[in-house]
Each structure stands twice: as structure tokens, then as C-alpha cells.
Image (cartoon, rainbow over all chains, first blue to last red; front, top):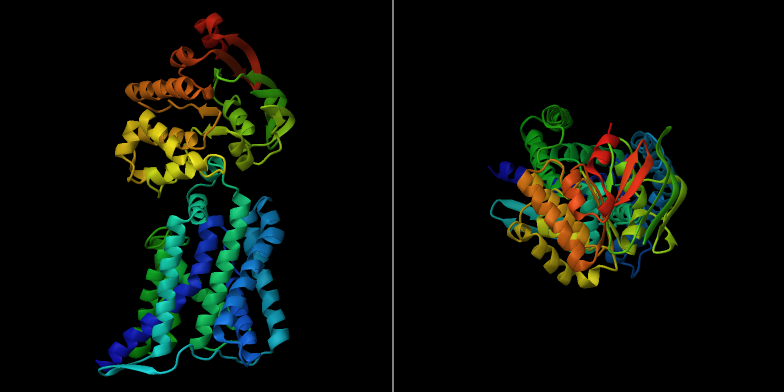
Length: 289
Length: 232
């Protein structure tokens, strides 16, 4: 019973982190219909940025690291859009050329990170120390904190999409590009801001993941593939779908690890992934931002 | 108010607009007739910046707009109501209307404009919290027109607003267009197939065939047979 409860809890923790990883992917796709194949490397870049500030040591703290990472990635995202994706989207077959371009860009960035930081594993220290004992179950406070951060982030994103002018513009574009043009939305400007927002969110998810797992220049691909499965399960373009799918797949992972062994996690994930694609290609919840 | 001179338009290699010149004066209702697939919709899309003219000039209130992006044109006061409506399906009626007031010029008067569109389309007040994907065809059309009005246009361009509607609903739509023109002094350029209904509204008409203006008439001189004949 205790191991079952522990598994559920660790499933919820990793699930919410996976959901966080998937958010950036789903936001960009939802608004611009571009699938970011360099997604995982962006998360890794965010984590390295925070790590760099942290390891500069002294009075520089975690919060500053996260802040720098958010700002730099926001700017990076808008620049990537402005100078590469925007011109690509004006050409025929942009949907496939942007995918290939971003894949190539991801590999390039991965190797740049490898040059700068080397292949050795780094880790970001826990955000909070200590344990919480609930009867037979012990939860690391850091894990609890991660879940809270992810939940707050999700709620904030939902409020942003629902109540801000910019969020509503993003939703409008997600639902109808011609409709958005007709009401006078500057599509290209909003695409740029969307890339900025999604890159910042993605980088932040990388920071969170690196407090729980390890960080190296190559780990982004694994994160991206997980994000991949989650968005196809929850509906590409749907933020709430990503959370829902992240939690379910996190619990699946924990249960599989507990009862049949960790090496079965990916095969089972991918069976789910392919079955969902075959039966409901729009995802379980459909594609609402 | 709106002046087109020698406008050409292409879809890939296919020329759909040939040397189109026309004028819409302030306060007028101008109807555009013509067979399907002869360039009427492309013409409206070209005016509002959704489609690029390959030659010619488009002037709105004296300013050249043919190379401006659509959001700038909306901000200048042209609203285009596409035949396909292009509503935001997962948003409520009210959210759709508020998106209509997105441009900087219309935003301050959102409340007054909202009051006016709900007066023109009382049905939308009843449906305000419903998602637009749950509306009937006629109601969706009302949302499309109302959303366009929320941008506070001085020129409203409608692409076949009555298509696919029941006779009763068509009547409502035409009545509303008349009211918009009469009470808000909004100039109207309407593309229609419902010739007789549109003639009741229009001050002038143009006939567009094979991408060219075939003739122009003032409402007083219109001869319905002449228009119908031009369709064949």
C-alpha cells in the first residue's frame, strides 16, 4: 500500500513536470501551427542559463537565475520567430520546412551548449530542502513545491488567455487566422510574442526538470519526446489537455515502474501514443488553447 | 471615400480582377452583383488587405491602402464581413464581439458600440454567453456583422450576408443593414445574389463579370432584367 501511494505521488510529481515541458510546445502549435522540433533544447538552454547564474555563486540566487533565463529565452524566442520562422512561413510548404528548420536549429543549439558547458552532467540544487511526512508516505518538500509552481503557472496561463488582450488575441488566432485578421489583429506581431512566451515557459520547465533530474546538453530530446506524447494525448494546441495528459502519463509511468519495471515505461507510453493518434488524432480533449 | 483605379488581382497564375475601377461615396449603399467565381469576393478581400492587388491603386479617404496589412486597414475604419464568417468558435458571443473592438481606435468606445449592436441584433443579447459554435447559421451571421461593427468602421463591406439563410432571417439581415446605414451613417459596400432585396437598400450598383466591371447604375435607373441577363 505504501509503495502504491508513493508511486501515485511520484507519478503526480513527474506528471506535472512533463506537463510543464509540453506547455511551450502546445502554445506555439496552438497559435501558429508550427511544430517546434527544437523544443527540448530550448528547455535545456533555459536550465543552463539558470545554472550559470547559480554557479557564479555568492549572492546570486535561484530566483535571479530563473528571471534571467525567462528574459533571455523570451527575447531569443521573438528573435527566432522574427528572423527565421516569419520568412519561412511566407513560403510554400512552410509547415514542413519550419519543422525541419527547427530540428536543425535544435541540433545546432545542442552542440553549442555542448561546446560551452561540456558533456558532464550538471544539476540544479533543490529549490527547498526537507521532507513532509504524511503517515507512511514521505514527500520531498521540493517536489511539493514543484507541483505548486506548475499549478500556479497553469492557472496564470489560463487567466492570461482568458482575460488579457494579448491572450485573447492569441486565442483568436488559434481559432481562426482569417477571423483574427478581419478584426484587425497584427498576426505576425502576435506570433512573435507567442514564440517569446513559449520559449520562456519552456526554459522555465527546463529549470524545474533539472532540479529533479539531471542536466546535460543532450537530455532535451528525451524531454521533447515526452512532451510530444503528452501533446498528442492531450490535444496539440491545448494547454489544459497537456496538464491532464501529463498527470495521467506520469501515473502510468509510476505504476509501470512499480509493477512491471522501468524498462517498460517507454514502450507502454508509445503504445498509448500511437493508439491515441489512431483513434483520436485531435487528442483526448481536442485542440483548445 | 473609397476609390479603386485599375486594380488587377491574381490567384497564382489566374487573373481574377482586371482593371477594376470603382467609387464608393460617403454615406452610400453600393451593391455589387455578378456571377459566382467572377471576382466579387476577391475584390472585397483585396480592399481590406487579405489579398494583394498586383496592380492599380486603392484609396481610402484619400490615402493609398493597397500595400497596407489588414490590421492597419481595419484601424483606418474598413470592416469586412466574410461570407465564411470566420467566428472564434470556442469563444462566447460576447467574447467575439469584444474581439471586434481590438483595434486602438475602436477600443475607447467599446461600450457604446456594444449597446448599438445589441440594439440592432437583440437576439445576440439573449445568446451572449453561448459559444458561437452552438449558434444557428442566421445567428452566426449576426455575430459576424456585429463583430465587424464593433471595430467602429466608417465603411462596412459585406460578402453575401444573406446566403444560406431562411427568408425570414434574410429579411432581418437586410433590415439591420439598412438600420446601420441610416442610424450610424456607415457607408456600405455589399456583395449579394439576392438582387431584389439588395436593390431595396442600394443607392448604386456595379455589375462584375469575369473580373471586370461590366456596368454601373444608380438605383433609380436599375433594370432588373438587365442585371439578370448579365448573369448569363
